[in-house]
Length: 93
Image 1 (spheres, rainbow, N blue to C red):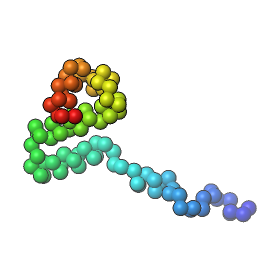
Image 2: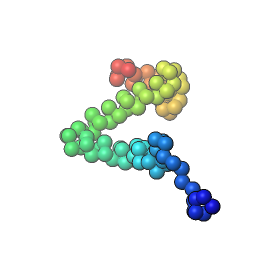
Image 3: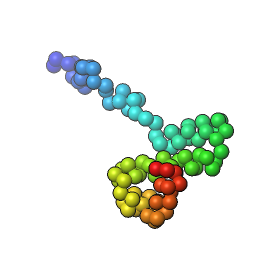
Image 4: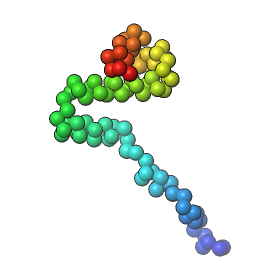
């Protein structure tokens, strides 16, 4: 036997191994959120400001996902289309 009977290993060709790829992935969302909340609290950002910024960015991302289609975005957000329109106006999106 050429390889000694043990499991064969792939030669490294500059392609990250599966374990290396996992280490390059982002941390889980809950962990990212925990870090973000900690940073905001440390910097003295108050809850109303944090909530407003989160809502603004969340709505903007859902609108982008739905290519500006308000009806589909409102459905994804589980809010009425008129409410979404008011939020877009409020946040100047």
